[in-house]
Every structure is written in C-alpha cells, then in structure tokens.
Image (tube, rainbow, N blue to C red):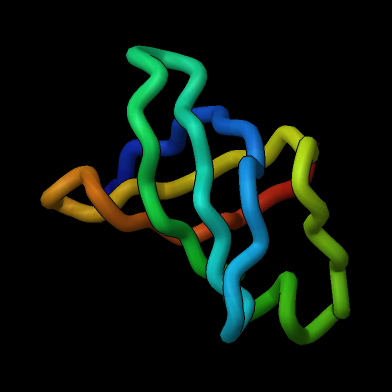
Length: 68
C-alpha cells in the first residue's frame, strides 16, 4: 500500500519525538512522529526544518520519513 508523501515544515517540537508540522499544500497543521530509520540513525529534526511526511488515511497524523 503506497502512502502519500508531502512536504512540510516543522513548527514545534513536542515530547516523545512528536512534531507539529505545517503542510506546504493547503497550509494545514498535522502531528508527525519520526520514522524508525530516522530514530535508528539519530537524525535530528528541529523547528524550521523542511521534511517529507507520509500522511495516514485520516490526514491528521503522519510519519516523518526524510529531512530535506
């Protein structure tokens, strides 16, 4: 099952490796968590970073898969 990947900007870092993201398309805000490979390789994500997010079926939560 292919997931939709969209670009977003990190607005705020929340506890538990969760982030508040603003999507480029539409400007809506979603919650995102780090993908397993990003945790494994200790890739840091900070507010202001551009990231690639795979959105879930509801479109309100997503997984950060890449830092751009």
